[in-house]
Image 1 (cartoon, rainbow, N blue to C red):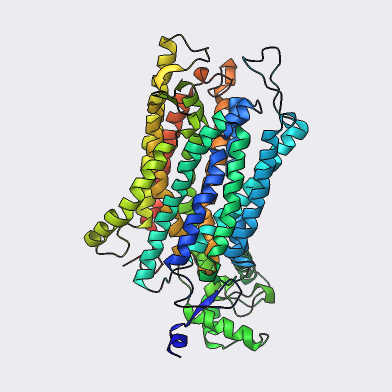
Image 2 (cartoon, helix red, strand yellow; image 1 turned 120 degrees about the horizontal axis):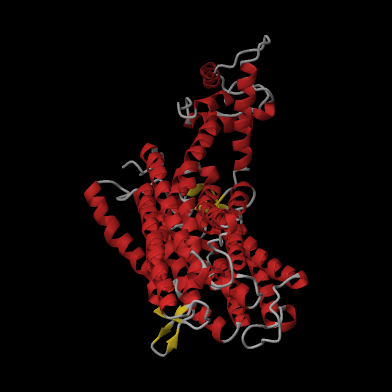
Amino acid sequence: MEEEQQLTRWEGYVDWRRRPALRGRHGGMLAASFVLVVEILENLAFLANASNLVLYLSEYMHFSPTKSANNVTNFMGTAFLLALLGGFLSDAFFTTYHIYLISAVIEFLGLVVLTVQARSPSLKPSACGPANLDIPCQEAHGGRAAMLFLGLYLVALGVGGIKGSLPAHGAEQFDEDTPQGRKQRSTFFNYFVFCLSCGGLVAVTLVVWIEDNKGWEWGFGISTISILLSIPLFLAGSATYRNKIPCGSPLTTILKVLVAATLNSCISRSPKGCISRSPSNAVASMATSPSSPTFTSKEAEENAKARESTDAPTESFKFLNIAAVDNPVHKALECTIQQVEDVKIVLKLFPIFACTIMLNCCLAQLSTFSVQQAATMDTKLGSLKVPPASLPIFPVTFIMILAPVYDHLIIPFARKVTKSEMGITHLQRIGIGLVLSIIAMATAALVEIKRKRVATNSGLLDSEHPLPITFFWIAFQYLFLGSADLFTLAGLLEFFFTEAPSSMRSLATSFSWASLAMGYYLSSVIVSIVNNVTGISKHRPWLSGSNLNHFQLERFYWLMCVLSALNFLNYLLWAIRYKYRSTGANK
């Protein structure tokens, strides 16, 4: 009897069998631990190929360096942008539990397609280059290109669903009504990035080495096995998970409020003799009226609960308040004050989201031009030849060291100094990441100047032989961008999850990955614009051709540095004005 009293229900949560989730049995760090281990395998499967994909496309599919870079950024961008779909489905119709399982199967199928193509010579373009001078290089086209992109974008769809559901699933396991639960949730996000880096470490070392020395079919095969193993491992934690009950489409709520505010505003200003819908009168009417006569008793009860949490609309985005009126244009456009306030919260998050896109545009260079730079340099480490795609080992290792230090030393110290529960706020973490991205781009420009100077002095501008300069120089830009990624990604994930309305948390958490996606897309757009602008008047475009030594890559990096600095100034304007709403954020 005492045990039954202790096992009280988690309101709004169910277990994997859709029974009420119970305190003491579901949720907590044990449940989140399964998510962390699964993230290692999931990111291993994704990053093992993404980090080296630009070389696969150029050397085996015979795309040009610029086209290879754009294909990689488009693939990565699509994968992260589809996280919005995963988050939306998790909030609206399914649970994060089910979305992960479905997405993992889709990614598995995509990797199977890529493995089969990499293993079969007839499904790839004919080998060419110095070893096959009599065979012209032809990029993949027709059925071969279709198979390549089918596999890639099945992987992108699966990765998007996983990114949109897995972080939110782990964060949902903690009780945000207690200080201990909030601190554990913050620890979870730090270790989520740590585990993401663990998977990345194996991917950019062991798997990349296997791809370069044993063949790409082995690399794709390892990724396939990795994502397949993650499924039973995730299922093993089913008995411990608490799964948030879907609350309906958050996009429908947002659209309904925006449409209602627009139409109600137009009608109130109509010159015809229509009833004026003043927001203040509407609020008073809603507060005093128990329910609309058209509601059922169940609907009335739900609306009453919504009104209890918000008695009056806030002054921010005041034009939306008119959406909550007692006599809307149409019954389908009836909005509660709580729904209006939820939409306001989402709108407040967008400026922060937008300011992180430029940082992720800088991060996109790690998997494109930076890899191609390293491929022209001396990659020997003693007697060992390091694959260029293994360069991310530097930021990944640094993140794995810094993440525990940050969580167990820096944050406790900051809490004592600031006398606040958070220690360092989410927006401060994001700001640090933006500053580091500026430093990284300046460093990248200086390193490229040195690399080209060595190529010129050595007479190797048009040679395919490695330049007499160690690839460790490239490690500096990786180090700064990796550090920026740690501060920004962990800060963004927790910021969006804690600040968003509870009915939109999976979708809001997906904004972190959508920012990555927009960064990759922006990288492709900037490269295209730079080539078009710099190619005017018969000048050679900065980033065109097949020889990286003839690129003006250092100028491109300086441009990215300036844009990042301007973006940081814009971020400061929004971050200073932002007011936290989450529990514990202001303590």
